[in-house]
Length: 471
Ligand code: NAD
Image (tube, rainbow, N blue to C red; front, side, top):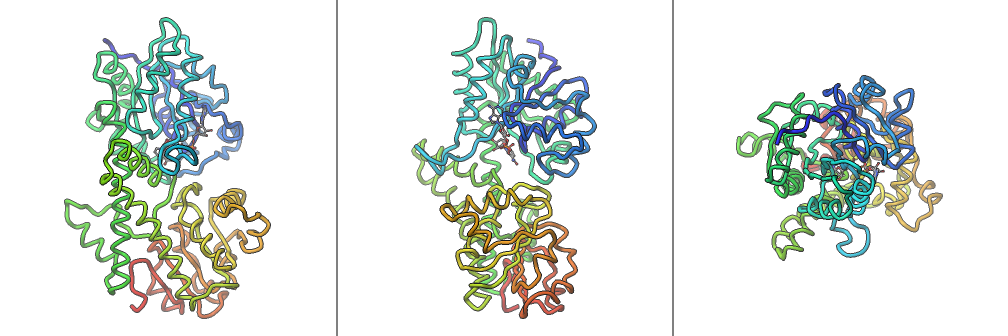
């Protein structure tokens, strides 16, 4: 069966994955018309904004959208028209962890995937290749196929592919330009293989053939969960070692460097921190835990659960270290939290460690000043309110202030907590900050970002993840 040469692509979901991924496809494939749809009108308006105030911040994204928007890249809320026109449809909707019901706290909420799938079946009047872009539990493609086949019109056939996304927020555009690999899973039938070849033909416009891996559907789905679980496991491993370093006088940077020199381990992703965040790591591991339990593999579930528990422990340990160092009480003390995003170079705050730290400081009745270069105020208030259910926003606002610069946030503070590794925090005029802070002035570096010796020479008392306070 000759592979289809794709000329019209639709992406359902204009979020952190669908937006950048399909914008890059439009850039690299000028012969393909790419439409990205979303139910969220405000998000689509932002993607279409005349001054390119896009709904998400990613270095390089604006440039890509400027080159393609209106040429072969379109953003719309008209999901039905998008489905009708397309030959290939990416489903890139959110798959959060279930908040209530069976499997709450662990299982993926597949409601959005199912709704998008039902919509495709209801609207499509011609055959489509449907591509799972969202991260989903193993064998979700089977459920999608059942829904599509049960609801399709005569002469409509649907081929389902899995094509999980491996981009990291903050480096999404360079990851998409130069991916380590593109993974495509398909059924090993002639039709499945032809659909796979059609999608491969899209990526082949800029990705080398040997970097496009084609595998079975279930392997592809599981590989995405496995990749995130193993990345998070690396962070939890190095964070577990950081606790031993703090207690013994070993230095986690030196230990991680020495370990990473072993070519079997490798140097990447071995940075200790206050804990991982983001919408994916925790959710995908919990998904794996749920899958393992459903498959009656409790020991496997326990193994992966521990990665998340270590992450929670790391955040708690850091908050406690702040309180202990500030003479066992932070009541009424002003603490400047620098960074609110879950990592640098993104405005995304989902599962950000900063939220947990601030909630801990609030519960100890500290006064908290916040500064982040990308996260807007409305988002910060929404996150803080969600983190403290039952506490009115007005009460939270009595304890928390949002500032427009790092220097302002640090004024009159007793301690600065670095929660996100924004490069600008490295380059702050720390001598100025020192002048404006109460003394003794403490810095807690949760990201191994600043030069502790230099800050120490200015007069700060610096506490760093993975280093003993005594050194
Ligand atoms: P997101 O919440 O930013 O975007 C999802 C979008 O889908 C939302 O704007 C929502 O309004 C829209 N949507 C939901 N149902 C819809 C429907 N029926 N029709 C039209 N629009 C609909 O989520 P995201 O961060 O882009 O993640 C999407 C998927 O990709 C998730 O499964 C996630 O696990 C996975 N993923 C995310 C990342 C990441 O770094 N964020 C990386 C790799 C994979």
